Image (cartoon, rainbow, N blue to C red):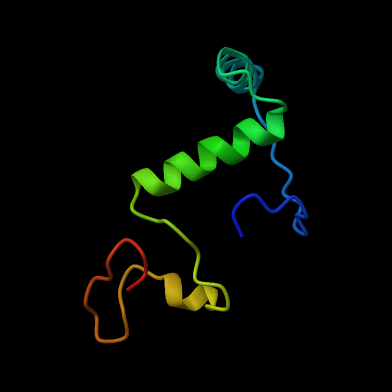
Length: 79
């Protein structure tokens, strides 16, 4: 749900000092309220740029491979 403020999943990442500086510079130039908000926005933009607009909730990780069972390439979004 877009704009949902109840986030049930936590993701912890490690960044280099250069990555943190780049993130903070990007965040401050856009007046983002937090690093978390900036990371969510960058993640959303990156996924959209790659052709992913939403996740298929309930799909198994095995369904996100590069080739399907017949040996044919899958499209970027797993289809």
